[in-house]
Image 1 (spheres, rainbow, N blue to C red):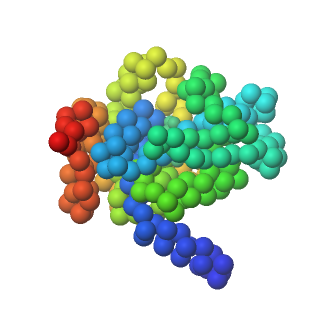
Image 2: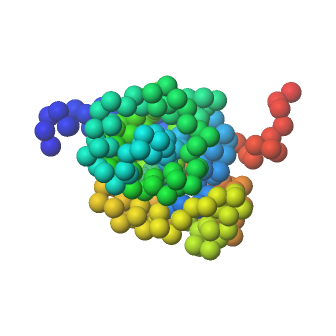
Image 3: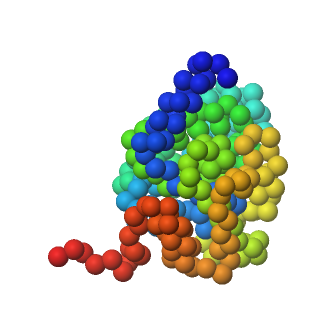
Length: 241
Ligand code: DC
């Protein structure tokens, strides 16, 4: 490792020592977002949805008529695009050239192309760097595909949540979405750059027969064992008198 790389890696480790990261990875429609958001609320941590970052860039690429398979054009686009990741109400938000594309992130064309776009190495480098910025200032619950394996490999808090394929399909359909999750899972797991994998020290949770609160309770129990303080379910919490 070069001195420069070592210095960078120490700096990342120091940043990670100062703030806590709970990594939640898993395939499409496994329940990651709902679980991560609820858990972040209970812990009082910031919630970061890394998939939304890849979706936002995909949306912008598509609306500019760039072919999501054309890595050279995407690299070129990335040289000019102004991608800003900040916070709104304790949750990550992404602005592209000052536009917030939040309402388009689940559009059918974004669902269909996001796996292609997220396999572009330069894009992954840019977004991973932005994800790591959050930990300089905040404790985080971050969800995605490679959070425990690549973005924050040193965090001791890693979870991989999964559900049976037909359960995941039903969840997407219930949300009124058309999302070819089997295709996305295949693309996300087989790509060369940071594929979806179960980090070796991650705890795997099957959510097929669990409610969101059920999954969060399991994770909370684990975290308490590791010394973190986690509040009870948010709806049930009474204001302090
Ligand atoms: O979590 P999601 O379904 O919104 O993610 C959308 C896509 O983004 C997913 O199919 C692959 C990509 N992604 C990724 O490559 N790495 C991440 N950490 C998060 C998402």
